[in-house]
Image 1: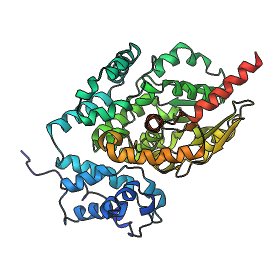
Image 2 (image 1 turned 135 degrees about the vertical axis):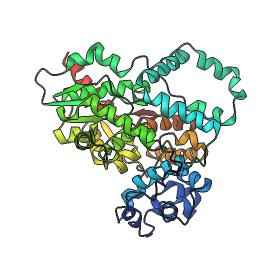
Image 3 (image 1 turned 60 degrees about the vertical axis):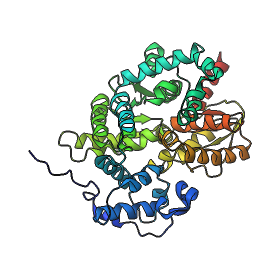
Image 4 (image 1 turned 180 degrees about the vertical axis):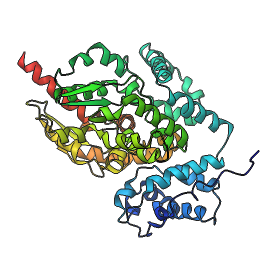
Length: 440
């Protein structure tokens, strides 16, 4: 029996990727964790130096290294700022995978939580929807309000008490239910494009109406929209948390479910999902069965705003006057390099006054599950974001990622700031519906 240790994953990296970092420091002003700590190790170049030391065998991947890798937001702002084109995303994900391989952060509690969330819950749409249904009943029955008023939350550990206000509002119907109950029948008889929509995980349970709005907008612009029933989580949560093999398995499931060869585009309306899905080709590069199909997939993945601009979407004729600002999802702007298209969509809606947000591309502190794993740092970033939102005078914030939306909604309550958080595509859908109302 082979008892040799597993290979160091950082030593298997293409060394040229590590060497790209010139240590110039241009990434430092863009890094939220460096801004909070002013410590070199909490900067992108500091983390890359640690990764290189481990790849060279000069340093062990110990607990301090592991904690630093999980203190990183993974927002990729440094990647946008880098003049040398360092692929920080690959380094970051491989570093976390090495942390999990070594088990330096392993504990019974951590292992149990990761096993449930990453291996069980977020690998099954059926289990996710069951959980969503339970949350919906808990909230609609009045139990949540009763528990909050009763003082029972004081019995919880401080970490859980801090998370409870972040609990999102579950929806009564999933995307597939809304699709089957009427949206599918609205597909155009002679479509210009044939697209598949990723319904997502959190998006499906908490923001299924955004998915419905996305479908309506695509149909208004000549698209036949397919919602593959066998699709699963995109795998971004797994890829960003060191579970690379699970991320690969989910990528294969989604490629089979969507059959990208038969579509004009695979549409996503969530910045984090789209950023991960764009790199299925990299994730499955060594897979003899899926490598070529993954290349087709990655070429077809489109953010909804990007796709609408590319096909020349129809500007609505009417809209509701309102002042709003826009927060860039980190993975939409820095991962997918999509920042102008959402603003073009918003600017095309009559009546909207778009006020640019200071540090619009600065992380809000959500960052996947960062507000769960690093609550103090997350709230520091959220307070900074809400200060800039308040300065705009807008009471509507548009953003294109479910994690950001939940975080900003919490930020409004935390700052006593009346705030509506919307997806840009929902505003476009509302404008299209207002047109039809006027014609009746």
